[in-house]
Each structure stands twice: as structure tokens, then as C-alpha cells.
Image (tube, rainbow, N blue to C red):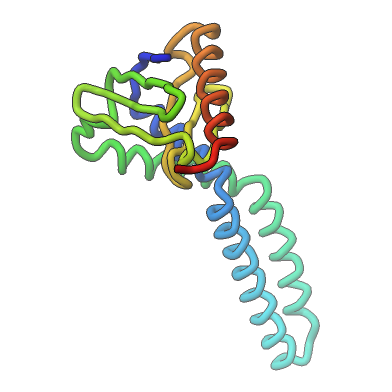
Length: 181
């Protein structure tokens, strides 16, 4: 089955944002950063509390940690989203990137998925595909842990999109059940 669509800067930004939000590596990094900042604040408060012989620095540290936690949960995701968008736009917007943008087709066969454009061809055997993810705006066929074919949902009718995605998932599932050669 073949599927024809256009890739744009917005599609690549959508992938970058999805990856940043859903990647275990990115999640671990955010968690480590949160723990590091809280650890520094607690250590500083303990040192100050012992030097001043007062609990006041610990109270301030507790307040800071509470405020930082709220920031981390409510505001930080929006800030991170803006930063990822700006980074992706800068990275993918630098140069012509003829192989990344424009008309292309994706072909699904029993053995592999192939993306072709005027300037680029990339084939991945289904056994190497990490996962297939759907979002409200795109499908991502991860050909490795940090890269994927980005297929915009709005590029075709819902029926064609659904048929394509079902064919991709079926071929991938079938390949996973076969022994590797």
C-alpha cells in the first residue's frame, strides 16, 4: 500500500514535541533535573540552618520546593513545549532540507516501510521498527528510538489514513511474530 503526502516544518516540529513529551530518556532527564534542584535547595537550607542555628532556612526551602513543584507541574510543560518548538524550528529551518520537506510517499510491504521523495529514499524492515504511535494530528512510525516517519493526518481522507495505519500496524505485528533472519 502506498500513501502520498507532504512533509512540512510543522510536521517535524510535531514529531520533536511528541518525542520530547513521551520519551523515557527525556522524562528521566526532567526528573533528574527536578531532583537535582530540590537537592541543592535542601542542602543549602541545611547548611544555612546549622550556621544560623535556626529553622528559618528550612521553612524557606520548604516554601521554595512547594512553589517549584507547582511550577514544575503546571507551568514548566508549557515552557518546555515552547522551547522544543523553537529548537526544532531552528534545527529543521536551518538550510533547505530538501530530503525532509515536500511531497513524498510511504510504501507499506510485508517486509518493510519505505519513504521516498524526489531527493531521498529510506527503507526500514518491520523487525527494526520500534513502535507506531498515533496522535490527534499525526502518526509516527519510529524506525529507531529517536527518529520516525511523520505522517500528517490531515493530508488525506480519514478512510485512507485509517487504511494506511491499519496496514502498517498489521505488517509490523506480523513481522514481530516472525523469527528474525
